[in-house]
Amino acid sequence: MAMLPNPLPHLAADPTGAALDLRLPPGSLVDTTHEGRWHEPLLWYADGPATADTWRSLLPARTAGLQPVLIEAGAPHSKGPSGWDLMPDLTSYPGDHDAEEVLAGFWTDLLEDVAEEGEEDDVLAPYGTQWPGLATALAPAVDPDEAAAAITADLVTTDWLEKPHAALVHARRSADIPAALGWSGPLNYENDPARLCAVLRSWEDRFGIRVVALAFDRLTLTVAAPPRTQEEAEAVAAEHYAFCPDNIDQGTYETLREYAAKAVLDVHTWSFWWD
View 1 (cartoon, rainbow, N blue to C red):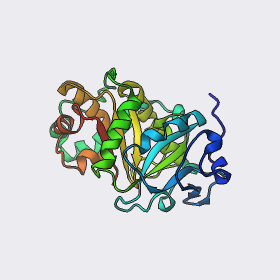
View 2 (cartoon, helix red, strand yellow):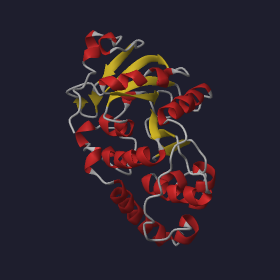
View 3 (tube, helix red, strand yellow):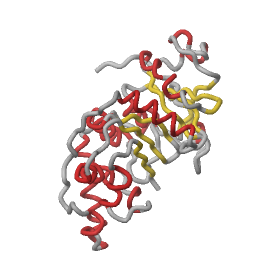
């Protein structure tokens, strides 16, 4: 499917975005990667901090092919996108990957490590060595964008995000934002963020997620249709474990069941962190 040309270069001569029917605060274009300057801007990044209504205010940019996201400038190890190792040259296209194949491959690799430690029954119950398959889709009761706007406003005002700034990324859909940036947050786990974005696309379709914030190594999603039962939550938790095992292996949750009950069941914000 064809995609609109990158509109971000227009903001160099038109910083307010008026030509794109936008009203942007002062900001700058970022084209710095781990190997130097990229051939076009990767994102627009606001100079000042985000407010409660910032993410919602950027939604009209989608008509120009830009996706809103908040960049955590004050998170640990983070100096904002200009200080990140963005790697668009290593990134493929999310649509070229199948979400279930990606997760099943991660699951198999992880199970080899867990089995060596003899902990698979404790950590992965109710699942075992076989990939359990994708969780059942859930219908959102509210529009995913409306849910994301309300949840993000709360995240900003409660300081859950570390000094977030508004940003715009040229991407087909919210789930593609990490790949469009060449984000290297999960580098120690997966070198190609497009493979993870294939999973994010699936979650966007099945649970109404939106990618609302990125830090140096942390990804924050809003969820319009989170699991409502423990069984549903455990099925989603298995996907989370394959997607980002550090959430359990290096987090505050000792088992998949505990993680499902406390971090997935009826939880409208999913966060992932890679060591």
